[in-house]
Amino acid sequence: MKAYGAADKGNKVWRCKCSDQNRTGTASRLRDHFLKGACNVTRLRGTISKEELLRREQGRDAAIAELGGAVTGAGTELDLSSSEDEIGTEDAVTTVALTKSSITHGRQTKIVDSAAIITANEQTQRTIDDWMTAECVPFNMMRSMYWDRMVKALMNAPKSFQYAKFDDARTKRVAVTRKRVSKRMEQLRKEWPVSGCMLQLDGWTNRRGRPFINVMVSFPKGVVFWRAVCMQHREKGAKAYFDILSTAIREIGEEAVGGVVMDNAATCAAAGRMVEAEFKHIFSVSCTAHSIDLMLEQFGKIGWVDVILKKSAEVVKFFMNQSRVRDLLLVNSQGAILARPGATRFATNFIMLDIVQDLYLPLRACLTDKDWKDSIVLPGQRHLFAAATETILDNDLWAGVEKLQKTSEELLQLLRLTDGAGPTMRKIYGGMDAAVESLRSEECFTKMEKEELEEIIMRRWNTMTSPLHCATMFLDPEFRDSSLEKDPEVMDGFWTWVYSWAKPTEYKELDEEVNC
Image 1 (cartoon, rainbow, N blue to C red):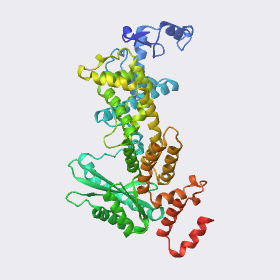
Image 2 (image 1 turned 180 degrees about the vertical axis):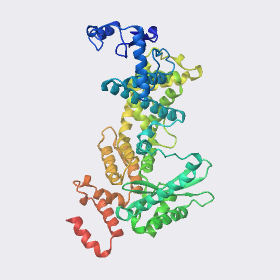
Image 3 (image 1 turned 180 degrees about the horizontal axis):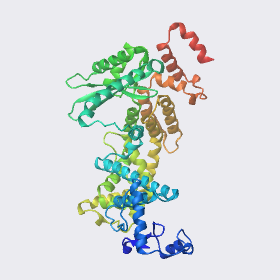
Image 4 (image 1 turned 30 degrees about the vertical axis):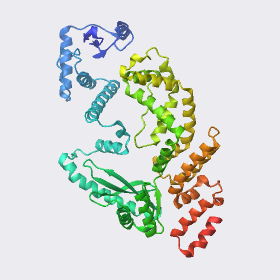
């Protein structure tokens, strides 16, 4: 036996001269190797001299060289003491072991080959890790179907493949991609007369401060971008919005478009009415997410609601702005943290309220912690410390938080639904009905409070509802057992939608199919 490596570092490797194999472990394993293993001393027939051993090693190296293997030299020793480069050490072991495997049995070859594959895989993965780390690539990118498709294509690429460099990628490859996308858009466009589609307008501002209007097309398979219109130095009235919509409708095909979706601004509402007047079968639909956000904004203007929201926001602000207080909450909540409300997204006030309620016990635990004392903050902020302590200990506030949650629970669920992926219009009418019925059934509200909250919901719902909401709900299998044919509002909207596109000669046939 010969030992390689430093024993004090725990990486000593034993090389058996008899079997020409590496062995690791304690003396007990080495004893078993000579008494029970392949080098059982009971099977030895005699000993050889050093000269004979050297001659045999030279003959072995000559045979390996003749077969095209790497010769390490007779009598040379393999140095495994250097551990500066993990990959280099593994590669050295792999190289020698592969050389030895050419004259040993198949079992050893399989083990060594597996080690070589693992080493190569690790090196490849580290290259990917380095790229993602250096370029700050988000990990969610690896969940994309296009990531898997790209990796598989590179793995199966021919040897002659060369990826596009910087200049080609931003010029030639962009042009090729644009042609492919345009071709795919034409294929999807042929499906819209059968499946139907809706136009969506969304405004945004680029880095140079130029306003744009995005025109998008939504259909059962998803949403695609149609065009962007620069609104700089242009009139932003209802006529401008109508011109953008009418142009897109005629490009796509009037028979394929069922409605247009915009936000609740007065300009957009006026443009929607102009579209309905020009195209009789196309309906204007307000953005449901924006409408729900406006409902919650009106909720926040009610006196008792405003008090609870402001006190909760002050607690959140205090815990988020003071680093030592925030760290104390992180310890007591096991990593959970409060959420700040948005400035223009009023639904975030109620989302903040839900998180505050979820962290009720951790917030109370902070008050009983030995580190909760006024010295945890600066002297100029100790009045905020006292106010936050008083607010957290106020049981009336927590009762108000639970009460306020019941006003927004159904609306927040509907908001999450409409902001999700896939077509959701058929669920909006039923969701609004469920929100109103839930509000009416709550016993924690007084009659006056119920009327005030319901009035806010119905006022906004009456402005955003359209015949498309009624028609999609009536055709949704989920509401098949809800006796919608007895609901006059739903049926009125459904027939308004049917008569907008059906020919007069088809009215009787359609009526029989619906009432069968």
